[in-house]
Amino acid sequence: MGRQYLVEDELAERIYRFLLDFAAKRDISLMYSPLRHVAKCALNGLFVHSDINLIIIDTDLPLAKKCFVLAHELGHYVLHRRYMNPIWAKAYWSKDCRSWRMKKEAEADRFAGLLLDSAKRSVQSETGRGFSESY
Image 1 (tube, rainbow, N blue to C red):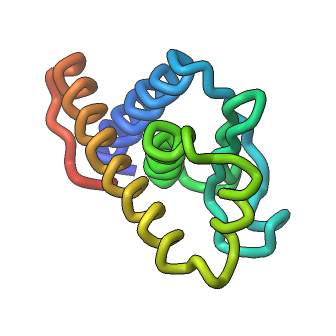
Image 2 (cartoon, rainbow, N blue to C red):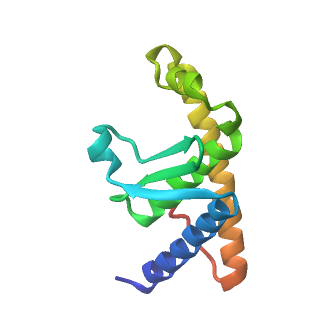
Image 3 (tube, one colour):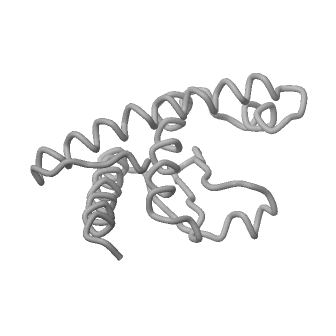
């Protein structure tokens, strides 16, 4: 393994800690589960809004992917939690609402990109190192 990958791994860990801190400040619990095996679909993460706010992340993902998935699920928390209720959840997973669901996923993806950019800048300023685009 080259030095560049060691630096990127260290930075990815710092970015993940940044995201964990972001979640903790908002009282969001995290859980890790083999989602792809349990859900039997390509589910990498899930935000659950009820009495507690919970993000579940697939345990089998590499760290860089976990960073994106956590940022994406935080996007659902920030952008969509006020709308989440049992009726919303039923509509969300309905085949009839596919375009609406895709819009919500795209919104969470855009939020994740912005949050990851902020995390990268924060980590770079702490370390004084550059960061290659691996996210």
